[in-house]
Image 1 (cartoon, rainbow over the protein chains, first blue to last red):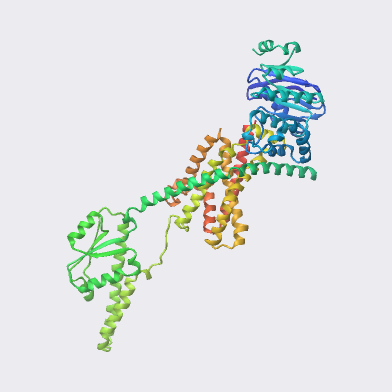
Image 2 (image 1 turned 180 degrees about the vertical axis):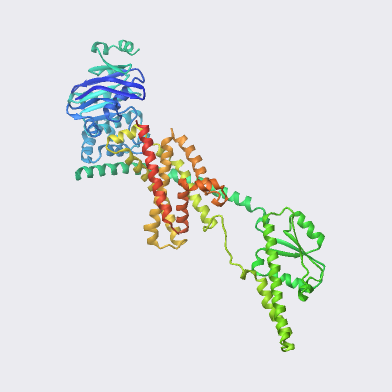
Length: 225
Length: 410
């Protein structure tokens, strides 16, 4: 679904990412972990197309080059900060992200992701008046407006309550079952537990973690030190 | 291709709709901010005018004392006549008093000058002796005393010339031994003609009004400056709007196909429309009923110019907030920069009162051209240069906004 080869990113003389390579198979969930400030969000921003990189190649669905248009069409991106317009309602935000596809929006409000997340109950509510959980659900719904096959999430469950986390995890499991792929960064045990493959970023390099170790949080903690 | 263009336009319109809807939600804050600052500005103006004009001497008539020992009733008559002349009545006030009283009042600042008339002053004028009067000014009086002295000397010289004309007329009459019974009548007529001409000094001068505000009235000048300041200060109420497009949101919107320059222009456009909605009707009424402009001219020419002015200022405010770390810093920066810019552009003290170095720098300040355009709008007379320069400045600020956004999102 997604192939990254020898990706490097630096800010001036400071190397953030050095020769990063990874592959995202279809129907799989990749988790990326690392200490704070190691470059996880930077990598996700690059994959999503919101940040440039110095060298390397990224191929989408094995054929599409990594461009702004292709990123928008094939990769749904939920950053840590919710990309929502605070002064507007949930419906206004959905309308923007769905763009000209009003029929799709109508359908999704009936039985798509917005309906699944219960967003229809607070369509007229302003984003600034919503709880963190409601905002995150709305962010995910907006990011997947184009029903992209790849979803990139940057710490999706941070500061959310357990029911909300459960809802998001259930959705992601169904999303994966449909043959789509997910890349996720997180410090949450529950998020890491649903990953099929785990990568660690340390000292600007990436390495795959043994799947047995990935379920052992104390062992993971040792990796991060 | 057309489908792509259509989709693109629809995307931009969708984003503009979002920005406009967000901007409209700030109208109550905008109005509140404008009311607060308008009250502040009116307060300052009131206090300033009280400070400037509380000293009655600055706008009162010039008081001149006449000191004479001459009992000739013609002095009172002459005084009354001169005092009622158009060119004198609005400026001078004469009083006849004793020498001691006059000098006391002069020392106390109650009088501008003391005129000492010698004995037989009127007789001297009538018989041609022309004994001079003495004009005494306060020793600490400034350049205006030189002006007064010059005018008084000119008046005396004109009077002498008039007298010469009268005597020449009478001498000519007598030389040709014309009817002696008519001499008195002719003398009176000549006196009336020449003295009237000599004393009606306004005939000799072409009055020219000089004002530090140029061709603008004081009211128009300060109304225009207040308008620009109001636009700038009310941006404080929209600080959150100007800072709403955070870095990650801008990048995410860019993913949707709306590039940074479009984001900047559409955001500035949205907030400009809000200001325009507030000011359009009041300006339309002002232009039509106060400036007596044609309604169609106001709608199709003046209002678009007003919008361009508002847009230019909004791009400037957007830049200030974009380079600020947060809305609070942006607010402080906007307030400080606005006051400095308007002052340096001659919006608080007219250009004539500012140092030469500042006057030379004025054309390079954006606020100078905003003020010029505001002067045009409030006076009803338009120069194309202010409009073109305001447009160019807007383009420059959009470009600077773009550069700032690119640097932020590297």
